[in-house]
Image (cartoon, rainbow, N blue to C red; front, side, top):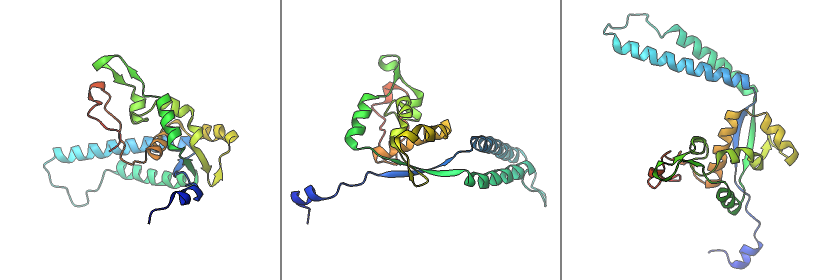
Length: 203
């Protein structure tokens, strides 16, 4: 049976949803991992293209490019190091009404006019075509809730954000939007104004 109005008046407020985000604080380590991942990807593509071009059957004992093996081993070692430098950040949603007002106050930015308008690329990629991503970045502390289980006080927000790399801050923005929109299917909208009527940010 559904709850009565009296039940609704006396029930405890529901806790706002949260989301945990692993954050590596060693920026140099993160940059090195990105470099090796890029190098490994290039090596794998080159190896696949080489296999397509040759008609000779592989010889017994032929193995993968030793450079690929070396890069994979380096990446594995860095992943082990990353675990020691990673902490858990918890972001917490604000009330839906507050979020709706915030979105209205910080709309997506456009360049040009009419059908030639183009959405700001950061707003498309980071803000999912829903908000001004720069405004969200500048107010990101509002959503910080816990670091490694300890509550992030208002006076600690700046220190926490300064310890987080710009790339990870962008990712936190995406997680905040997913948290607020209640969807895991958000995708960046088309950059063109003429196609926005066909695109939907939320499935």
